[in-house]
Each structure stands twice: as structure tokens, then as C-alpha cells.
Amino acid sequence: MGDRKLITRLFISLFGVVHFCNFYSLNVQLERLFLSDGLIPVKAYIEKLLLNDTVSSFDKLLSCTSIFVLFNSDLFITCCAMLGLLLSLMVIAGFHSRWCFLLIFPLYMSFANAGQELYSFQWDSLILESTFLALLLPCSGYFYRRFERGSDLLVNGLFLWLLFRLYIESGVAKLFWGPNSWSTLEAMSHYYETAPIPTSLGYWFHFLPEWWHELETGSTLIIEILIAGLIFAGKWPRRTAFVLLTGFQILIILTANYGIFNYTTLCLHLFLLKDRDLHSLARYIPKLKAWIGEKANLTPLKPKVWLYPIAVIIVSFSIIEFMMFAGGRGVHSTKLAKIQKYTGATRIASRYHLFGPIDPIRYEMVYECRYGDSSWVVMNLPYKIDELTDKAPFVAPHHPRVDFRMWFERYPASWGKEVSMPYKDLKVSPTVLSGYLERLSRQLLDSPVLAYRHFLPHEYMDSIPEEVRISYYHYNMLKDDSLPNQFWTRKPVGVVYIDPALDSASNRFQLKNPPPPLPPEEIALNNAIAAVQKNPTANNYLNLGVAFYNMRKYNECIQASIEVLRIDPNNHVAYNNICTAYNQLGDFQKAYQACQACLQLKSDYGRAKNNLNYAIRMLKSGK
Image 1 (tube, rainbow, N blue to C red):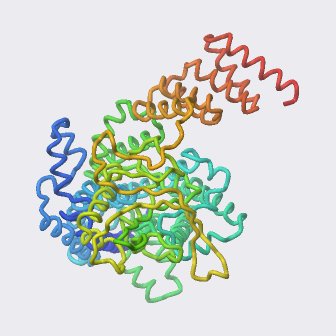
Image 2: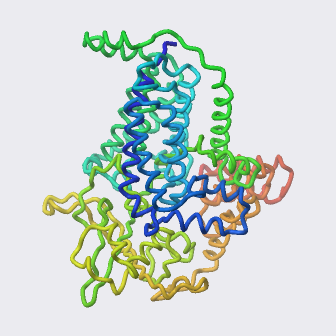
Image 3: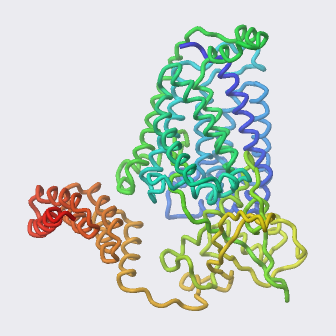
């Protein structure tokens, strides 16, 4: 294998550009997010963490591995953000890249861990893992003047291992997580409309024919699962993978905004190539070919000895993450989860499931304020879809954290199953909202000057709102020649009114018009779901399966019973539940197979025999 001297040099410079864009985006939002008057103030977060006496000091450090635990003044945080920009420029210039990456890694990890839900995206993990691997590359020295070797076989393999996991795990998540819109080839017909921050080109793609969306869906699965398998193959398969995967990432960049994710991935693609490939690409440009031939080193390189133990640690940690990813909920109460708690705190290996389930419905929350006798005034965020005339923008690699994160706030998770969409109008305490939304809501009511920093200017910028509410809408992309300036249509889903008086834990929200009581079966289902979320044991999953069956949700009953069998493979009750559910669905062949498996356990023989006889009768009757 030839050396990758030029490839390594190109990666270092381009990855420096990605870091510069990332730290620039962080600096732009620093005052509004991380500082004392921000939505996720670091100092308040650290103080609350340190005052929690129920957690040991070591566990506190694990939950927030950050230099801000020691120093968290606004001045220090600002200096750290500016230092990140400076170090990124030094990497781009080729000034002692390894030492720069050595400082960038803990710097950005500090921001990511202290950033709470606004810095919990997978691309934050991806850039951290990539930065740690960049530490293993040869140092650029003083502006590449003594840069004599590129990445060796071992380090290159670690980068390819990261790239492989990124694609394979994302592909597997599409097939086995959540709704089956990928396996039914429906996902891409919803993808462009429901992207958190779509682009104008994504808007155009949404209205392409249905057969095209089915082709896109199938192609995505092929690229992420099959083409990704070429990453460790020979020269031409790797070249093919480079072209297809790079084209795939460029299409994502053109149709939606995901911050630095796609740009980080494109940098990783470079390790699919060798210097020989660059030499071949430049064959029609004599001067460039001569320069590459002069600078490149095409002789094989052996890894340095000290890299081997580090490689073992990285691969081991990544395997633990993959086992957590593949094991489902059942693995979260095992010893493996306890080990992952420690390995995950290092941020040198992560799990990835990008664009797994595609939600077919776009819900958006919109802040609205009322001033005196005025009607409700919409508070528009710069990049988020609020108004019907909002044109999808190109934003990336800048990542507007608040605009992006609000897409995930379908309705406050802390309401549990008591409220679902569509819902009656509510009066709520700010405490039921996510941390950053609670602070934003309080700022709108108490210190609107601070809150207005997040929104576009409007005519009431000098006024304090009398009321604040959040309206929820179901949005759809619109293409109507009679309305050339309107890109969206929406239907109201519900409204919540922010009421600071509702602060007691027992009265966090009030229905303006109480809904009718839930039927007993639905109450039982909600209780079963809550029990599984709190403690995912076999018995709780068994109760969940029964609750789904009583609600005539037979597919969900089967899935819950399968989770039981993952935890307890010899659970005859789960097998019988699967038999009964398949009989109800009319899939008698699968019911027959499940009954046979249950009979082999020699337990609950009577019920299994009855289910088996019923399935046999239906099969013989041709049903």
C-alpha cells in the first residue's frame, strides 16, 4: 500500500476548515447560548451539577467531562471559543497540527458536554471522534516544511473503520428502527418536507414523482449498506465507494442543512484514496502531475509501535458502542451499559444512526406574543420555518442550534402520555418545557431584550409582552402557481399558554377544556409504556404486549413479545402471545411457526395447542 502523504496533508487542511466553520458558528451563538444570560448558561449548569449530593464526584465528572467544571466564568468561556478559532486557522496553515488537535479535542468536548440538548447531535460526536483520530496523524510541523510521511496503514484503517461504522449503523437503523418507511420505500417521499431546516433545492426535490422517491429510498439503503462494504476492498472498489459516497453526501448538502456533519464525512472520504489516485487524476494536467509526483511518497509505511495499543482501545470502545446500538432496550440494564458509561465519557467512539426513522408529519412550534390590544405577533426565528412564506435557506456549515433543535420539540416530553397531538389548548408552567425553551419563555415574559436576540426584528422590539404562547402546526410544502410567494400550508394542532404561576410540581399544566377520560385499555397501555421506559424488564414488556393486544394493536404486541424473547428466550407466554397476534392478523403460517416453537418448550401446552390447531384449520381452509 502506498503512502498517503498528500492525502494526509489535504485532510489536515480541509479538516481545519471544518473546525473553523464549527467554532465560528459556536462563537456567533456564544453569548445567546453559553454565557450567563444565554439559554444554556454553563455556569448555572455546572453549579447545579456540583450541588447535586445524590451523585458521586466521579459520576459528576463522567456526566460532564469539561474544563468548565474548573473554570466557568463568561470571560474564560469566551476565550476558549476564540482559542478554538485560532487553533483551527493554525491547522489550516499547517502549523503543528497535532498539537492544535490536542487542544481542539478537549476544547470542543467541553462545549459539547456543557451544551446539553443543544449540543447533543451525532455530528458533534463525529467531529470529536475524527479529531481524536487526527491526533494519530503525523504532525504537519512548521507549515509542512518537514512533513515527510502521511498516515500509515494502521491509522488509515482507523479512519476507514469510523467511516464504515457511520454508514453501516445508519443503514441498519433505517431498516430496524421505528416505522418501516425505509423498507416500504416511502421514506424519501417525506424526507425533504420533514427535514429540520430544508433547502430551496430540497423543496424542489419534494415534488418529484413518487417513483423517483422510491428509487432514492432504495439507493440510499444500497449506498449505506452495500457500497459501504467496499470501504475495505481493493483499489477499484474503494475508488467506486469514494465517488458514490461523495456524491451521496453532496446531495444531502444540497437538499438539507445539517451543520458540519456532511463536511466532516467528506473529509473522511479522503482516506479511501491514495497518493497514486491523485497522481492518476492529474494525468491531463502536466504541471499538477509533476508537482504531485514530486511531493508524494508512494512507498509503503509501517505503523509506529505506540499506535497499536491506542488502536486496540479505539476499536474496543467502538465495539462497545455498536453492541449498545444493536442490543436494543434490553441491553441498557446490563453490565455492558455500565462499562459504556465510562468509555462513552471519553468521546473517542460513538454510535451513529443518522436519518433512521423518517417522520411523515412535520410539526412545528411557533412562539407568539401579545402586546396590549394587539393581535398575536409571530416571533420568527432566522432559519426556522415559521411563516407560510418562509423560503427554505442554505445555512450549513453554520448550525443555528435553537432553530434546528426546535424541530424536535413536537410537544414537551415531560407531559408523558397525558397529552398527545392534536390536543386541547393548555396553560402550562415553563418547567414542563425543555431547559432551553423554559429559559427562553421566561426571558420573553421577564427580560424580553434578552429573548429578542434569538428572533428576527419586529415592531414591538421595545415592548414587554403581556402574554406568551406556543402554537403548534402541521406543516406541508405547497406548490401552487396562483401563490408564487407561499411555500407552505399549515393546520393548527394546539396552543400552550406560558403561565409562570403554574410552578408547583403537582400543577405543572392545566387543560383549558379538559378532555374526556381515557378508556381503561388506553390507561393500561400508557401505564405499561411508562413501566417499560422506567425499567425494560421481560415482565414489563410482557405486560406491554398484553396491553397492545387488548387495544387490537397486534403488530405492536408482536414487537413487544419479541423484546421479551430477546431478554428471556424461553418465555412461553411471549411465544403464545405472538401465536395469538398472528392468528388475529391472519398470518397463519407465522402463527404456526410460533406455536411449534412454544410447544418445544413444553410449557403452557394447552394454550399453544389450541393456537396451533386454529392456525392449521385456517391453513387447510386456504385462508
